[in-house]
Image (cartoon, rainbow, N blue to C red; front, side):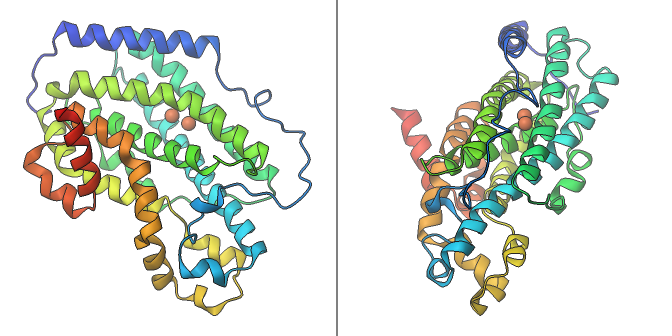
Length: 324
Ligand SMILES: [Fe+2]
Ligand SMILES: [Fe+2]
C-alpha cells in the first residue's frame, strides 16, 4: 500500500450527502427488465438504430460507396457493438464491485457500502436488458474487446480505496453514455433503441455523479492514483473515443459490396481522422473535459500529453472558460 494522507471529514460528509441522495433516487425508481421498454413493439421496416450523421462512415468517401441497405444495417450493428461492450463491461463491474464489497473495501463508509448494493443490482439489470435488446433486433453479441479482458486487474487500487477502478469505470460510463445519447438523437431512430438508451442513461447519470464525487473528495488520500490519473487520463480517453466509433467486425458481418471496404486499415484511417469526426469527438468529450479541469485530473505539467492525444482544442476551451 502506498503513502496515505488522511481525508478531511468535510470531504466524507460531501460523499455521504450525495450518496444518500443517489440511494433514495435508486429506491424510488430503477430499471426493470420487464416494464421500462416496449418489448412487444413489432419491427415493421428495417430500423435505424443510430442517427445518420453519427454512423462511422458519414462525412467520408465511404458513405457514397455504401448502399442505403448497407447503411441501415451499419446503423444497427454499430449500436449492437456498443450494447455488447456494455454487456461485457457491466458483467465485469458486477463481479469486481461485489468482490470489493465482500472484502470490506468500503466498510468505513457505510453509506457507500449501501450504495454499492444498488449500483451492482442496477448494472446486473442493465446487462440483462442489453442482451434482451440484442435478441429483439435479431442480432448477435460481439466478443469482448481486448482491453476489457484484464481491465480491473490492470487498474488495481494503490491506496485505501480502489480509486483507479472507480475513476476508470466512471470515465467509461460517461463517454459510453454520451455516445449513446447523441447516437439516438433523431426522430427516425427506432423507439426500442431510444428506450434502451434513455432508460440506461437515467441510471448511469447516478453512477457518473457518484464516481465524480468519490474522485473529487478522495483524490488526495492516494497520491499515486492522483499522479497516474493526471498522467494517463488523456491516453485512456483517446483510446476510448476512437474504439467507440466502430468495430471492424460490423463491416465483415454486413459484407459491403464495394471492394474499397476490404482495406480495413485505410477504412479506419479515413473514419477516425475525418473532419466531421473531429467535430463529433469534440462535442462528445466536452462535458468530461470540463470535469477533468475542475477536479484537478488535468494538470498543466502534463499539458503536452493532452495535446499529443489530440485534445488541445477542447482543453484550451475548458481552461478559457475556467478563467472567466
Ligand atoms: Fe449500466
Ligand atoms: Fe453504470
